[in-house]
Length: 199
View 1 (cartoon, rainbow, N blue to C red):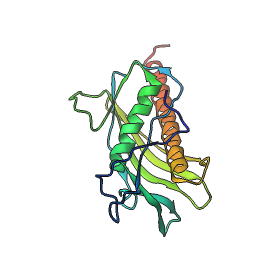
View 2 (view 1 turned 180 degrees about the vertical axis):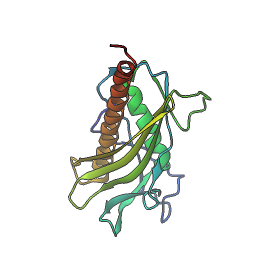
View 3 (view 1 turned 30 degrees about the vertical axis):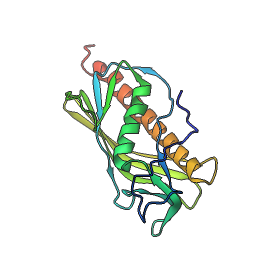
View 4 (view 1 turned 90 degrees about the horizontal axis):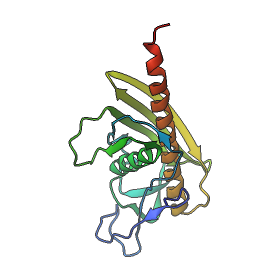
């Protein structure tokens, strides 16, 4: 079972990390977290690779960002490109929540016409000076020729100050974002039939 309080990390010494390779460098990856299962027959949902701010699109893990100054975590790097990782993990999170629906990430090798397409712009995904990890997202859901867009702002306080705790908090926020998106999909699906119902 996937744990919402666990950061999965992998040591991959052959990867390059910012200022150089180091035998003491630890590599982390975000992880899917458990959520509420919902019965949802949407066919196939595709989560596109999200857009992300250039300052965050880096191998090194940010320890803190105050809006002007970047502080990097010591000897800590991502084990894969962060934008691709966010898309992959969010697809896994949605798959955990939407029973009866196939959820694919942008990196999927399958050529399937998705019934629903989810696109994201990550505006903020950092540990702030207030001690909370913040996730601010502009999310777009497109299906049946219709597109809905919403801004989502989430935050959580890590259980510790070490990098692993921060990464776990980031994973939890992606799980919360998946809950928001699943609810949006289901709400729209529930309201669609009533719009064409005769009275």
